[in-house]
Length: 379
Length: 73
Image 1 (cartoon, one colour):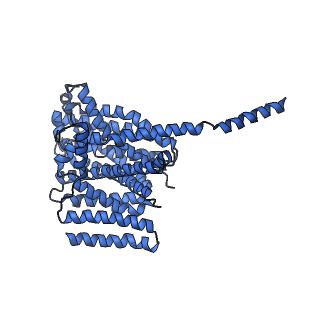
Image 2: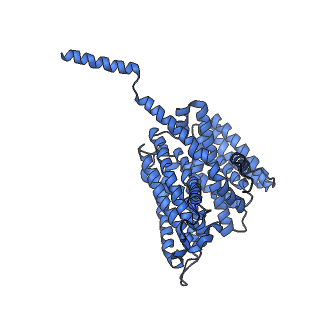
Image 3: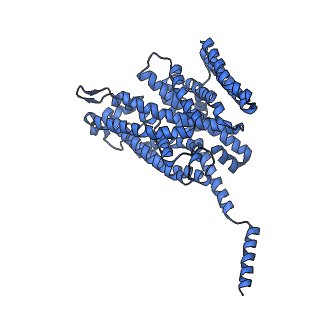
C-alpha cells in the first residue's frame, strides 16, 4: 500500500487549504475587517479539525468509504460515500472553474474557457492517476516555492501599503464579522473534510492531528497576512475585486526595475489549484471505485476528470454568477458535508470505539474466574 | 467541433477500453463505459451549443427554499 510521510501530508494540506483563496481571498463581505473574519474562520475550524483528525485516528489505514461502511453498514455507508464523492467532484469543479475564470480574465482573454480548463485538467488527471505519493512528493517541492513567492512579494509591496486602510477596526460590528467568519470557515478550512479521503495513506494513524493542526496554522497565517496585505494596498474596496491578490501584486513597483509582478501570484495560484483539484479528483475517483466495487480507481480517472471539467464549465454563466454563488450559497451548501455528516461519523465512531474497548460479560467472567483460580493456587 | 469531440473519444476509447477488454476486467469495463457515456454526452451537448442545466442553480433554489431567502438576495 502507498504511504506518505507526515511532511508530505502537511505540504499537501497547506497547498490544499490555500487553493483558490490566495487569489480570491476569504471573508469577502466585510471589506477592511476581512482579515478578522479570516481569524474567526480559523477559530471556528479548530474543533472541527480535531474532529476530522479524531475520525481518522480511530480508523488508521482506512479511507472515507471504508470508514463509512465500517460504521454505518453497507447501505448508509454507500450513501455517505456517494455524497462525499459528489462533494469532492463539485469542489474540484469549483476550483477548476475559478482557475479558468482567473486565466481568462487576466491572461488568455481570447481563449475559450473550456480550452483553458481542459488544458489544466490534463495535468490534474495525470496527477490523480499517478496517486497520492506523487502529489505528496510534488507538494514538498511546490510549497516552499509558493511561500517564498508570497513572502518576497509581501516584502516588496511594503512601499505601496497604507496602514490606515485597515482602520476603523471592527467597524462592521461583531455579529456581521462573525457571520463572515463562517464563510471563511466553509471556504477554505472546512473543505479539508475531503482530506479524510487521503489520510488513510499516513504511516502513523496519530499523525492526522499533527497534519490538520500544522496545515491549518500555516495556511491560516498565510491567508490572513495575504488578506491584510490586500487591504493595506487596495483599501476598503478590496472586496470589489474578483481577484484582489492579483490586483495588489500588479501595483508593486520598485523604480523601473521591478514592475508588474502579478505573474508570480498566477504561478502560485496555478500550483495551489493544481494540488487542490488533484486531491479532489483523487478522492472522487476512490469514492466511485468504492461505490462500484472496483479493484483500482486508476481506470476511471480520465473520464471522471473530464466529467469534472464539463461540470466546471456548466456550473455558472459568468464570473459574477460564480462569485455570487460562492458568497451567498456555498456557506449553506457546505454545512451538511463539513459539519453534519462528519459530526454523525465522529459520534458513531466514538460509540463503536468505546463498545469495542469494553470487555464482554463472558470475557469478564473468564478473567475473574482465572484470577480466583490463581489466588486459590497461591494459598 | 463535433468531429473533434468524436475523434478524441474514439482515441480515448482505444487507449482505455482495449486493455480492460483484453484483461477481462468486466466490472471496470462497464463502469468506465457508463462514465464515458456521461462524459461524451456532456461533451457532445457543449460542442453543439446546447445549454445544459446547471446543478448550481438547483442547489441555490433548494437553499433559498430552506433558508426562506428570496432569489438573488
